[in-house]
Amino acid sequence: MYKRGGLYDDVGAKARDRVKELRKSKSPQEPARSVNAKPFRHAQAIHSHNRRNLRSAPPSRTSLSPRTSPLPHNDPYKSAIMNGEDPPERPSEISSIINGLERYNPEAVGALETYLQDQCEQKFTDCNANRTLLKLYQLNPDRIKDEVITNVLVKTMTQFPSAQFSLALHLINPSAAVTGDLGEAITKLRSLNGQLEGAQYSRFWADLDDDMVADLIADIPDFEDVVRHRIALLVSQAFREIQITHLESWLGLNEDATKKFVTEVCGWTVESDGSVKVPSNPDNEAKKAEIREDVNVEQFSRVIRRSWEDTV
Image 1: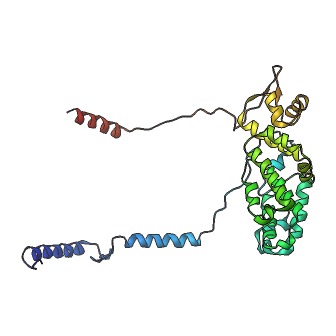
Image 2: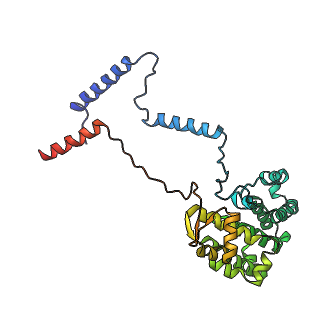
Image 3: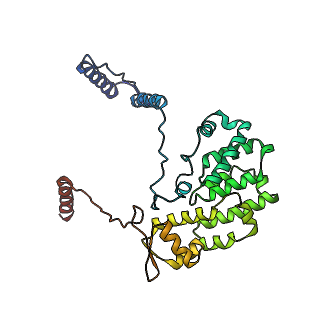
């Protein structure tokens, strides 16, 4: 055990004198800090201040505006493939249901089902409203309609590649998704969606030629045309030139129908050698990567000095 006094008392006295000198040297406007103050107390005060500001600040909303489509402006299916989350066709009544407490009201099911029928007839998709409908089905199992669920899943398939199909699928009651006719239909639609997500378009068109699938897509007019427009959009984002034989299998059309589709609908050019020219757009243009590093004189001199010191 150390004995107090001697050298330790001298060091402590010098430290206390030094603290007193520092306190006297401070300006009158600056209050003296306690010797026992925590070094991180000031940081805690700043953190608390920032947290109060964050709580009082209004939340920022990320823009969900769709990207510009490389397809022609007169494309009748552009609305169906561009913005499936918050489409401009959504009426104000549906917006009030989605954004308010009515989204949990079972009586809103009828309005959302009617709105889904409008989506099927007018060739646009509102995934946000359809998820609200599936959520109401989840909370009110007595109101579930199998044909409405399959229509929602078919509509979300047209939004590939995206997570819309998976989001809708996870709102369906698991017991209903694996049993009965609905379970069989969901299994088939999940397989078709996986082929679209994986760009297995030839296999998709082959599996689409099925009586069961024909019944599932019967309520969605022009479903095949919407899928073809979506595939064409993805092709225009990845290619500047492609053989028409590839497009035939990807679009599920014969040669004459493919030529008519790419020229009249997409606005592309078919060459005599069978190649298809896709106009340039921000997605398929080759961009030159420029890598630039700025090194100032001080940094460069430090490197030379270090190399000279290592040599010496």
